[in-house]
Length: 168
Image (cartoon, rainbow, N blue to C red):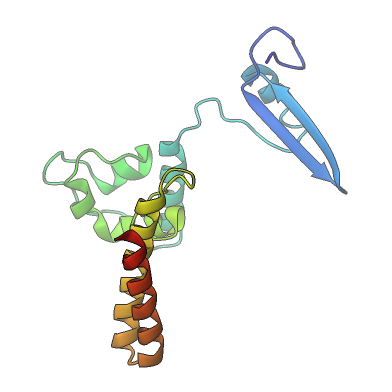
């Protein structure tokens, strides 16, 4: 699809604006999108990336005083907390240990949890989805037992058994 404005370059930016239930769509190339971004109330940064987004979120935490000016340094690659703030990318696997306390709030904000659960296609992931459901129910069961909510625990146990029969 070509840019609707210049009709020369491929359209890589697809804008949809809905005002009073009236939908307006525009397909633009990067150049035209930057030029017309102000008309749509947006600014486009040419080198936007996930690293820029993460760096901005970490920077935001620093502005609110959640992290000290001088923080930990990774013992493996030498990355400092200031470097991570600037580039928004970790240097190695050890960085997760070195910056763990600063990464947890960031992960919670970005993905809603500290644990990645992944996604399973609805059409082809039948058994995988059931196994994930069972695992999730087992975690809820442990929580219910810990809170001494035995009625809920019994319901969860029964649901786990039902799903296990479905698998087997």
